[in-house]
Amino acid sequence: MTKIKAVITNAPDGGVSVKTIDAERSNYKVLLSPIYTGVCGTDRGIVSSSLKFAYNPEGYDYLILGHESICEVLDSKVPEFKAGDLVVPVVRRPGDCVNCRIGRQDNCSDGKKHEAGITGMHGFMQQTFADDPEFLVKVEDKSLKEVGVLTEPLKNVLKAFEVFDTVSKRAVFHGKDSTVLGKNVVVIGTGCEAFLYTMMSRELSFNALMVNRHPLSEKIMKIFGDLGLRFVNYAEEPESQFSAGIDLLIDTSGDPTTVFNFLRKVNYNGVVILFGTNGKAPPGAFTGADIDYIVERNITIAGTVDAAKKHYIQATEYLTKWHALYGEKLENVITEKFPPENTAIFTSRQKDEIKSVIEWK
Ligand SMILES: [Zn+2]
Image 1 (cartoon, protein in one colour):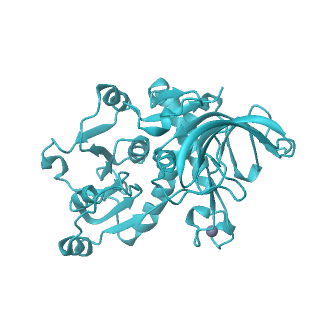
Image 2 (image 1 turned 180 degrees about the vertical axis):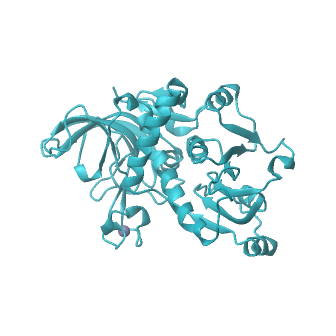
Image 3 (image 1 turned 120 degrees about the vertical axis):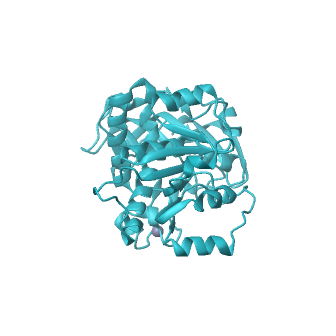
């Protein structure tokens, strides 16, 4: 047994503490140590016990938190990995449904998958942990030691665009020049996930606009501005901002009132991607007029969650490209680094936060 430090909660009751625990670390295929672990709304929802679907692994009265990470290989007994490699472990682990059996546990059809640091499986906020090579994604570019922690949130975006590709085939979506140049994407929200959706929308040649109903601090405006991203505080901007309509609406807020406000601006054959979850948002007024609008315009609304290993790989490729293009400007998206002992990172969103991370070494 080895003594290791871990950040734990008791799901679904919540709470957070840093404990030293005894762990078996002699029998492994790949032994890992996190460099950074990211904190997001899911971690905060588990800690505050507002996300009731979280649960401890079988036989444990605690859950080690952490699903966003960039890790270093300490030792490997398999040829695919060697000490010093950078890797990102996959969050969802398969159950035995038909989708899980083909590596698509992101589309699990009976809910029996597990999620590291969320549902029935310890997460990555521990000094060392063992994993199987099947669930590890190698990050070839060693300069991604910091921004590699964005691989996990970015993989969600790549899966969402796979969903978009599928549902947008029901009618011709692109323009007469075969591209999506001039097509408008509106991303609701300004957190890390919204930021990554906006980066990817622009990468795919869309006109991309991030919206929120409050102003952003100067610091955040500068980080987005340095990356050439556009933001509108829709509480203050005139409706004319959206007069060309929206071809692809992406929600990261989970707020029904906001979603339906923007849905009424979606163009013919448009697509709405729902990604945000927010059990605390007040109910929105979804009317018969909304249904008429959606039907008459052939609008497709699609929910999307998690992603497959192939999307993690694509995420590392885009991060490599963006890091080469933007360097420090991309690194600035990691707005704060905490030591594992400072659990304040879990209790509230930090001021001027895009992505807060825990630094393990
Ligand atoms: Zn399944």
